[in-house]
Amino acid sequence: MAHISIFVGSVNGGAERLSVDIAKQLDQAGHESTVIMDASVDDIKNAKNILVITSTTGQGDIPSNLAGLYFALNSTFPMLTDKPFGIIAMGDRCYGDTFCGAGRSFDELLRDLQAKPVGSRLEIDASVDYDPLPVAQPWLNSWLNKLQA
Ligand SMILES: Cc1cc2nc3c(=O)[nH]c(=O)nc-3n(C[C@H](O)[C@H](O)[C@H](O)COP(=O)(O)O)c2cc1C
Image (cartoon, rainbow, N blue to C red; front, side, top):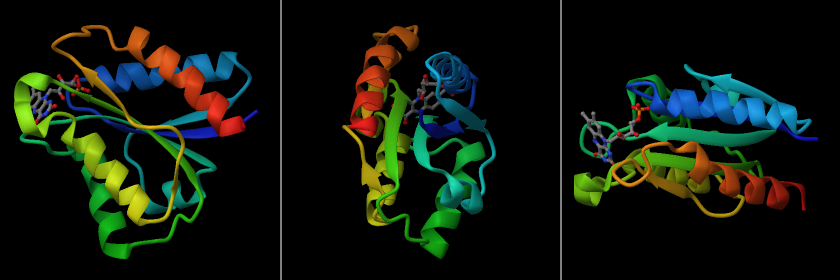
């Protein structure tokens, strides 16, 4: 059994819906999860396992409800040494080079803070996969296996 804190970045609700669906699945599988929409640095410092689920807005930008955490982490730089994390990045390949930019930025920052990547980042392309859940499900199962290995 793992406790997973889900840090959500969402503008139009897609990443938020996926986070809630994933939290339900985690709970059904006997884990504990918390979905956090407006996270603080303490939330991430206190998390046992971090799962960031974020869309991208603007031109590769982090949604405003998650951007505060990103900038606070960047300026206070708390070490998250060996804290396991995973990233589900949602975007749209039509945006070219900024595809999934928010998820990429968070991935880089958590690595800089010495958190421990579990598996590799999932990138979901809304121009191909209208419903993100079927793409996220197998990734989640494999992420959980690695987390508990
Ligand atoms: C104004 C706007 C800007 C966007 N900019 C990007 C972008 O730079 N890169 C990207 O990969 N996707 C971009 N997207 C696509 C969204 O990230 C994608 O549709 C996502 O699934 C939306 O999730 P949400 O409903 O949680 O906000 C943008 C969407 C909108 C509406």
